[in-house]
Length: 356
Image (tube, rainbow, N blue to C red; front, side, top):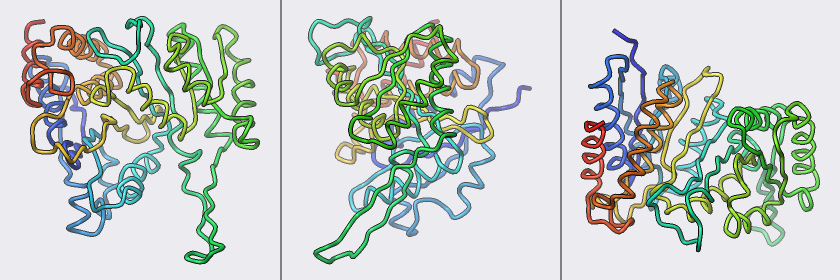
């Protein structure tokens, strides 16, 4: 018997439980046909509904309980009535920071068959991997509110860029670029952020000397945003800060078929703690319970999880079949022009896997 990969499942809010069910369905099928893979799933009811009932987004010992797992599979978090900063800081960011998930990986790839709002582009033109610093930077949570409610009220939000944090994310991106023989582009804003981003650029330049075989580029974030739309082919591997990465990857989703195809992984590369895999589309409460949510981003996140577990062949099969479904266009949800339900998309993925 192989040791099972222990996966903590947090379905979350809104459409989260609907899409996560399809990801688990696909993983369970893979387990059923491959004697070398075993999964042990445990579900946790945390999220905004839990917050409404209990006054907290997760159990007090939640981090300690999650630490025993190999990975976390997250559906979505957020719901009307619960402030976004509470749902973000008390669950998502708490997990990311507690488990030092300092690498956020988001593929910005135009799959064959996927729609795009851009004119005259092909899948060869949009194929980038965004490596986002995920533990500090603009989301460090450092700051203060002074003189609240007074005319002279002041809000301070401090970006925190440590040498350790900046070096390790940039070096991680260089290693990926070197391994894949691709260029690496740094995105910053040193002309306006004269401390944090000047420091970022300096560290990028320092580390680039260790990788003379990697072609490098550096763009200001506003120019990079323009080129994401006008000339995405110039980007291969991208490394950037927490805030900028959050923004440009949503832009990337917008040019590669929408948020229903946006996958994400939060990694602790050293594997001292569990990593977390999630679609980045949010909870979409307006369509929750209607079985029309697109689960393909969740399946893509499962592919990322399989790759992280060393199951590259299965990871590639899942991604290839997502692409086949987009090309065939017979079983897709309404956001992609189809009329299939969320569960029908998951069922079809399993049927396609059976045919391999």
